[in-house]
Image (tube, rainbow, N blue to C red):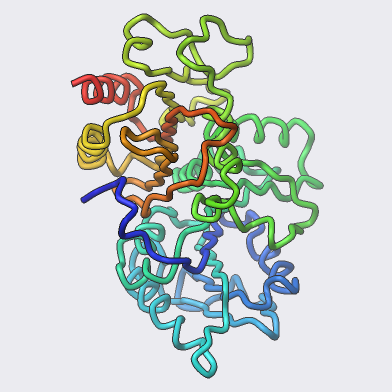
Length: 373
């Protein structure tokens, strides 16, 4: 298995937006207004229901130009994963007319109880699915009024927030200013790389949900900084002896400078319930040997893959002139993407991890050992 080989990267595929969020967060309201927008006329929407009858979506209004599939009788993240894979495979020909596919984008709405990871696994690991579809981004809807309480009580909600590329905050009109600010600060700690956006009565332009992942960034390499997150984008080089008071990076000791590695200090947690989730960023000044990095990725994903919620990286690989972007969820990786140029002309490797119960020291020690060996 190669994490860095671009030779087998599929041609242009259908972008997939995974829409998640806990029960009552406002996903249905969001979808109702999304499917009425002209830019969604060539979208396929797959709605998952938990239970025998899809009660939650009785009011769902599909656009006349689009198609709607409702998957009932089970949870999309477990018992009906096989049905999801078959639905995605069949959709390419099922929704075609005279040999032409009738949709150009796909939105999968999960049940509020779903962990996004198994759905992402289906998109990556099912060969006949990955041939046609590429995950464009995970969008998580959060309720401003009850979001903090939901994060306290439900591990699924915490994982949904931690894995998101875009966090949409709803119901701010019924939340207090203190509730809204507390939720936003908390989400920034759980997932510092995700963009937060406040919604007015569940409204957002459909195109704002596109281009969240690395595959669309080949022609817009500067956007990779946003995708990697502020921790990676604003990272100082290992030669920076001092940092601004608000920086996310700690001072570097001599051994780390020699290894070409810059550690990101964990931010203080505003709430003890988030202690399990951590975001870690590493910056490398020197080119990385591909074989050593692949050996390390293979080790940590085999031993700790279940708790590697997201892995993102823009890498300076020895022997390559252009940056290579990698993107993984748990132990599975999307095909890597090679960008045309280095964003901002700065040639540095950046690795960003969002983990559960994995100490930073474990990543730092093992990664240093492999790259220095």
